[in-house]
Image (tube, rainbow, N blue to C red; front, side, top):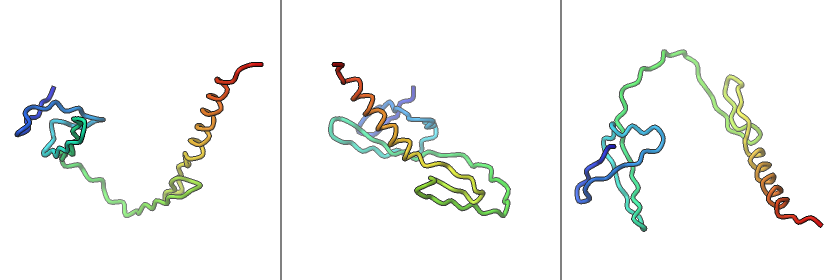
Length: 103
């Protein structure tokens, strides 16, 4: 387990979300809020990445209502909005059905 030493506070055991590389944290800014909760913003040192060769192609992205995203290669990603709305309606109908009493 990694423990960070903070001046005036002592040692702190960080909880990492996702794939945060704790060993590469260069600077951390802490913000204390009510209830004893402390939030942090971290600056992470990332090694140099290898650049891909230049293909002289441009990529355009269009965000829309009917289709969530359309690329310049005519690849599209559907909008999840109608699916989410239908899922909420299904949950409500299922909840109403489970509370219904038979005659």
